[in-house]
Image 1 (tube, rainbow over the protein chains, first blue to last red):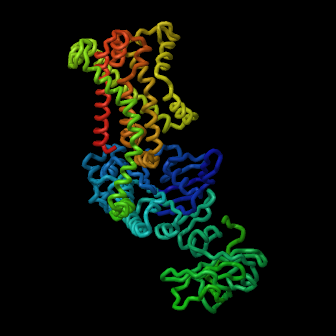
Image 2 (cartoon, helix red, strand yellow):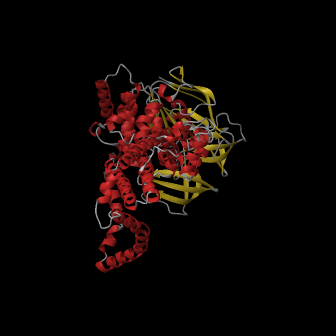
Length: 351
Length: 289
């Protein structure tokens, strides 16, 4: 069952927090809503769940208009950052809550027990069925919350920053778990709200980038990463060097140097922004050479990150760990391949 | 698990160096603490324990002289006392039940039903707590009394009138802790419940009520004890047939000049209050609150 936002606008006291969002999540698709806090991504999710009423526009689930339906009649699974487990209920009763609340005549008492066991099995929490939530770690509580959401067999699963309360190591483990769950439940559409680009890139079939209450870009992770449409997308999906350039003939001018890049249909003489991913910038001589001075060097184990000042602009370069790294203040040369750079229209930045 | 161990360590951390300090230091510190505790304890003894002791002593001294259990035997044997005891207990119990039901319902509305002025109402409850209890009774008399606005209702001078007045006056005492508990409640839980398919009644019963139990117990036990000792409301309703223990104390001490008898009733009243409070502590500890 797919989700469709049909120019959904949400406003609190005349303050627009979601501005005519148009977005379609296909059946079985994982869509990440990626954006900084206050970008409207959580509001979009809450509009699907039924916790906020759009000021205008419609929300459709599988072709059915649910804009006016209360949350309890939407049949949606939801997982939130703080787990929101019922503290006085044991794990299995938490998971059974939704099944009991629906009192579907098709599911008998033993049926409920079986479905609870299934959901707990699926999230690897079967051994903890008789525990109270307070006796579990954060990661375990989140697994229970996921089991509780899946027990009602929803067609749509909403995840609101589900991993943000977990530490980094647990997070990557849970990310793999979520990917596995999605493979096991290929028909469940997921709307995944996050501010973490790694989560979005790892998990999502498509990413919707949001900022300032608006949808900025939507596409597959590869599209957004390789060919971002604007500066905000470029800087929020992955790291990016955004260099102010002037379009020339067959290239661009930056800091007095001619750089060969694909200018496509940009008008010569126009101002534009050149986006180059730091890991595609090399150290040493090469095409599109930039000369600068090392201002900062960070060793990150497998890589070194250099902050090189080129004519007053900081250029980041992530290079494989260096045996003999340059020192602070050393002059260095950087280079990048012409087809690794993307030219963006200038003046789109919201930063 | 690792988290728990860490927490335990963190908790133990600052204690260890202090524990390592030697005897004299600890002794000096505890002596200092004793010195600080002395004035409040002395004041408490002078103004609270001493009068209480006097009352207890008086209750063992019949007018005929000497020390005996005679006043207790006399009081327990009297029909008036047994009647007052029963009236006090059932009125307090019924009032508490009424306050809990009404207070829970009202607090739910104020906390979870968005309406303009909900904050003002919540603030008014704080003010209401400072009103004297007889004020409510007086207001009820104006409305339902023999020359009342609505008309003359005889029930005001019956135990039901006292019950009405006590529920009206004491309900905010239940609502105060409830509203505090509700404001602590994670709205994400309510939302999770509703997206799982639960409607409002089920959410109230299975999510809100269990979370509110400690607050209900706190408010309820407070109201129970206050109702047991309520004097103003009973006096102001002027209910002839309604004699509670505090009224009996008043009657015996002021009207009949039967001091030992009054003291006996007072001691019984104190024992009931303290006993119920102890019971509440035991129950609430069992419940893990």
